[in-house]
Image (cartoon, rainbow, N blue to C red; front, side, top):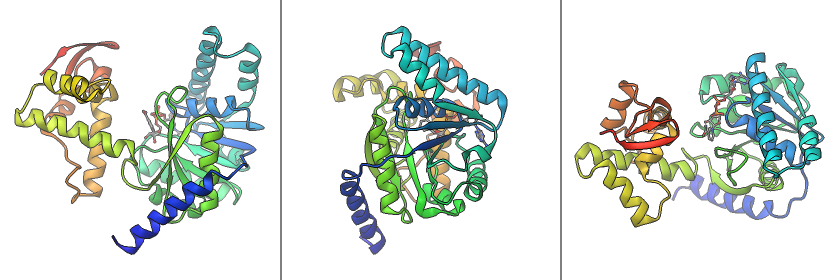
Length: 318
Ligand SMILES: NC(=O)c1ccc[n+]([C@@H]2O[C@H](COP(=O)([O-])OP(=O)(O)OC[C@H]3O[C@@H](n4cnc5c(N)ncnc54)[C@H](O)[C@@H]3O)[C@@H](O)[C@H]2O)c1
């Protein structure tokens, strides 16, 4: 193992043990991007009652309105189901400030970025926020597959940069991977790790490796299932049934790939193949490429490895 890997391993261990001792939190939190993930992150941050305010930012008013409607609808559902008191719901909603002006983020203590998965867009945002936010602001990206290190380098504050990888749906899924790079200040990492726990999630630590822990294990396993199809080793039904009944997985890998979206799976692996051409676990199966070319994207398009009727899965399609 080289010196860098050893240093990173030791840093990871130190960060983990230190984080358990921290008690501080952030007064204000910003969330950039209020889509599928960002609206949930803003909501759980506001619901934690830890912050004097949560500032929710979108670059365009129509998307800001959409994000706000998503939060309001999610909170109404919680109230209707008796999972949240009306008073707490009102407090949660009044704790969030909505804005399209990036300057409103300049004094936040912790900024979680959940804009679309595009490195050029993220770099441009970090370059702007790096110069407008106060020097103490800690940046945290929710990226699933992009390099935290590359974003940290453009931000002008690499030592105050971490990854916080939430899972969908944010309101329900407990796990958050907290990512450090070779630049991350251990005290900064500890604050981020502690914040995740404070808002009611479970933190795990990982270095800046593609896919972090969950997707690094999960996505290549989906690709292996597809490679079995390419080779004609087994059918869609038998591959999925095997991991369900033989390994206790809640759904098979091809069912899961359809559920995630075959385009999402494809773009994650394509990015990894381009960046790490020598990593044998990163491959694009022929059947995946073919389905993308044919517009069969899984559940969202009505057909992938299975036929879909909305949320309901039908028979195998290949
Ligand atoms: N979808 C998932 O299951 C999932 C899970 C974990 C992590 N992620 C990561 O979370 C991030 C967001 O993914 P998503 O699924 O919520 O995407 P999404 O498309 O639902 O939301 C992205 C939001 O970013 C907004 N946006 C675009 N440019 C912006 C800018 N310059 N400033 C502010 N907002 C801007 C868009 O208007 C949109 O509302 C990505 O990095 C993705 O990899 C996604």
